[in-house]
Length: 501
Image (tube, rainbow, N blue to C red; front, side, top):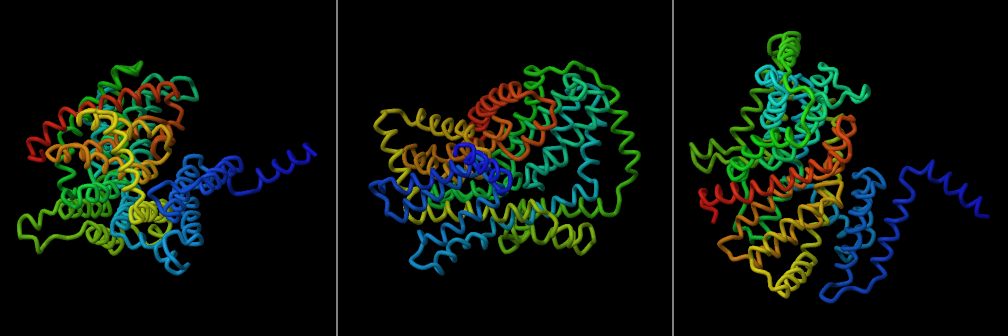
């Protein structure tokens, strides 16, 4: 009998399109939560939505199936259970409501635009130009990769596409040019160092621009809700607030990584020759590359709201409108075609999972769950007798380091950020609420430094084999603490200069 059950388990495990053991664990979590009594202060429907939401997060963490499938599962369960409405029609309307959000479409369209970077070769050209300028020493190559990340960040809302799809291939080409190859056991020559710089530039640039990673618009929405719409991070405000602390982090990061994981080769004059040779093979800028550059320039001007600054508020354009304009320009000029749009799976995948998570976060707020959780957390912190400075520090650190439990920044932000912001808004003196909000905003990207599964970029770079697991986690922890300290000192002082407190 036992042998038959084992054989049946092995059979199902080999044919079903999901990981069976994580699926069973996820199902057990859902059933357990639904059987628990409804906590005081919540309605049964609100508790049912909490159960669905937490189960979805667990399913994403355990990687039962791709995140898009898990998001669709949540949409189906929310619709069938009718926890957000009194009818299935009302429930499906609520379940699909977030797909009309301009914030979600901003990310989707911007991912489609970023496809042009790879198709035209402009992304590789930009990276090689910086290597040619800075590549005489290994640390110089690190700075070249870092500057490449910074230049691309405002236009590539998929940090995975930027760090893993554009910069990482350049980094691997340079490492291979120096025969630094994990397959040969020579990754320590330059590859380990460059891979770490390649990765750690990614979270910093993700913190510097609203359009640098997919969950950032969600952070904007949560900050506005937590402050009762009194503080709204526009593209320009975000970029200005994060500019100085972000640049300090980028300036020091390659040196800190150099100390933590020094390369065997310190001098790399051949890197300049390699980059110049590649650029020579590429030839002069193609017409499509020029169109990409022109489009990027236009997007940056419009996202920065420069026309409104010059001609008045009547010329203000919503960021999503600007993104659609950029995509349309690329299509009608033939820089990318409609097949490129249809085949960009990451954009449509993002639409599904991001939309579902945003929907559940919004419904949790509507049903009073976030308020209930924030009130409970506030009471616990008040009972502890901590001062407001300690409260702010605990909230930031608890939020950031809880990312060890998450394999998705969006899932983490959706699950926890609004509640933490709400508690801070209640317990921190009004004069200091905005710097707290900005620290939490920075932390929502800095937390990506911690693990090899922290965001989509990390498994790409870690999977290339240049960095061992122990080194990754050790350097990740140190860099996380370092960057938090920079934002807590340089950032807070900079925000004082800007008049935010």
